[in-house]
Structure formats: C-alpha cells, structure tokens
Length: 472
Image 1 (tube, rainbow, N blue to C red):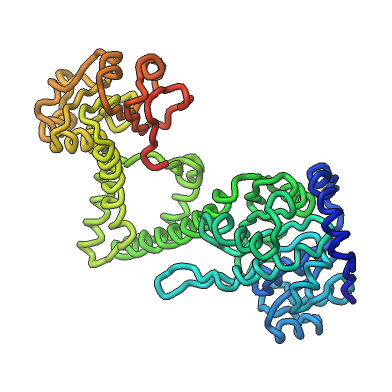
Image 2 (cartoon, rainbow, N blue to C red; image 1 turned 180 degrees about the vertical axis):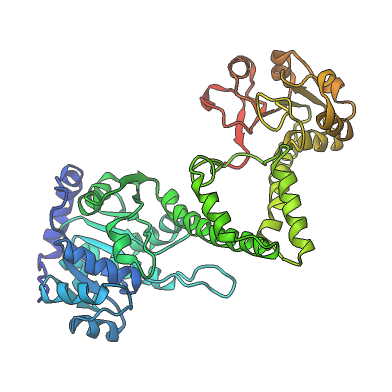
C-alpha cells in the first residue's frame, strides 16, 4: 500500500498550527474509530502491537532499520517467534492495511499517532543505553514541523522515571522547534506483554496505563485501547515509567521467593508445590494488596521470629537463601533511614507518638518504634513518648522482658500529655492516627517542626509542620 503524504507548504502548515493549538483540546476522538498509527521498532512489543492494532481496524505503518525484518513482513511473515503471531501477521498483511518502511519521515507524515518500541539495552554498568530512543526522538522531531495536524508520540520502551521529561521531550523539542503539550503530545504507556503469550496479553491486559500531561494524548489512547476488558488509568508520566520497573521487580521477586521456599521444603521432605498451592489460596493476605504499601519496617512477635527460624532451618540443611536472607538487613535499613532523616534535620528534641509494633496494641516485641527510640537515645537526643496502650507497669512475660532489655528506663520517657508533646518537640515521629492524635497535630504543630509520618496520616496539608514520609 503506497504511503499518502500531505504536501502542504511549510508556510501553510505554520499558519494552520496556530488554529490547531486552539482546537486540538476540543477535538472529538471517537472511541474505537480507526486511526493511522506508526510503530517504531519491530521487536516483540512492536511486531505484536503492529499486528494486533491492524487486526482491530487501524491503518498501520511499521518502521525499523533492519531490512531483514521489513522484508519478512512484506512477505507476510512476522520477524519474531510467538504463539499465533505468524497467522495474525499473514492475515493483516494480506488485508492491505499495513505498510512497512525504514523512513521516519514517511511514517510520521502518514500517521496521527506513533508508538516508540525501540530497545533500551543495559550498558556494562547496568544503566540504560538510550542511544536508539534518543535518535528516534530527534528524527521524529525533525519531521513534526512539516505536519499540519497534532501528532501523538507514545513511548512504550521501558525507560527510567524522568527519561521522557529529561531526555526524550528535550530531544524532540530541540529538533522540531515545537513545544510538547501545545504543538504535539508526548506520553508513556507501559506494556504488560509476556513473550509466548503476548497476543493474549494484548487482548486481556491487567490494566491500561497512560502517563501523560495533556488530555489530548489520553483521549487518543482511550480511543484505541478503551475497548479492552480492563480499567483504563491516567496517571503522571513518571508514575507510569516507574510502574513498569515495579511490576518486573515484583515478578522477579515472586519467582525467587517460590524457588527459595521450594529448596527449603525440598531439604526437609515437604512438597513445595503443595505449600505454594495453599499459600496462593489465601486471597486476603497473600495474593492481595495487603502489605503492598510503602510505609515503615515490619516488627512484632511473628514476622522477625519466624523469618529467623526459617533461615536457621535452611542453614542447618545447607540451603542458601540469598533473597530471604536479605529481608532483615533491608528492614533494618528502613529504620536507619528514619533515624537519618531526623539527624539530618538538625533538630534535637524528639516526640514519638506510638511505641508498639502495631497501633492499638501494647505489643513491644521487635517493634521498630522501640528500635527507633533506642537509636535516638544513643544519639543523645531528648526523647518523649506517647502511647496510651502501653502501660509499662502492666507489661508481662516476653513483652516486659523485651522492653526491659531494650530501654530499661522506658517509664521515665513516657507521657500522657499528648498536646504538650506535640507543642514542645522539635521532631514528631508519628506512628498512630487516632482521632486524638490527629486533633493534636492539627491544633499544635508549628512550621519549624519536622513531622516524620510512619502512619500514613490523612489530611497532611492540615498540619503546620514540615511533613515527610519515611518510605514515600
């Protein structure tokens, strides 16, 4: 199929662009209407996207610098090995709605939307090599001034947070002389395609995420992907960039966790598949959003104790568990991070609101708040603690032994006067969000105080102190 190029003069294009900037935001992008779309990079993501979008009725232009890939596609063959991709590619190429080229200019002038799917391979030090995506950005930018319509550029390559804002957008703007969000749209859409099942994953994604600063790009992508059976989510560019890394890291974590549990189970004659089958049946805590919020270190009578016992069991059976062995040091690092936040503030007196490992209980065993208190005392910082659930005189058993070994003079640090603690402390470390605590924070915080939030407080802008989260 021949490319149809609009040969409008540069002067006419520039005069029409002023009208375009005023009208683009109001343009009606009908959901599901066919679009003219170019795909840059015909690897796994690009080749699958090209075929699936063509199947869905869009006019497609595939772009790649590899002549071998282009020739395969012209013959109706996919350049990748993937379940169902050969049949789908053959069908859409025969349908006449797909063209392939190595010309960036032809593809940009022939389409409204471009998906950039080029590789971002690792360098020797682990950092990304952005050579290919930067070059494509510059080449696209050089063509944009020739267009009389607003172009939407969608980055699908996996890139670190800040790459669109700090690398890709400046490259396009410098080579085009145009401004993102006014003359063209730029956004990020992470893909969730797995090799081997990518067509099915394309048709049944867990969600569709678009990171964009302007609504024009969001609505353009809603028109293309809004029919898919999942939630369509608009978020910030940097959040969308980070999401892809978080997902892949979580997948790697799950594989490693299952394998390490498998090896320990194997060493003691337990069927690990039965263990993991039962583990996954718990949809309330295990396979759920439970615990998956940035907050603070874990503690209590179960998690640290049982993790230590599991590691000891593995060691006795000569099983190395690198990932599980790293959990306690990682947990300690979050506590040190909180201590460093306080020390870096230069403020002295510390008021801690909450001492037990979980608000509403008096369980101090392995409480990260107790460890924080120990560290503050060790640094010579004046410390005052409020926790109405903790009555030192009533503590018994292991709970009492733990606190006596950690902070034997804990009673002298406790107070029942919450208002005075909030008023008089230079630093507030808050691990409780009861109505009493929230009222005291709203009434008595000062602009010169540091408020270190461990409880994920609501209505944070109502506190006059300098607010900081621990892991957020």
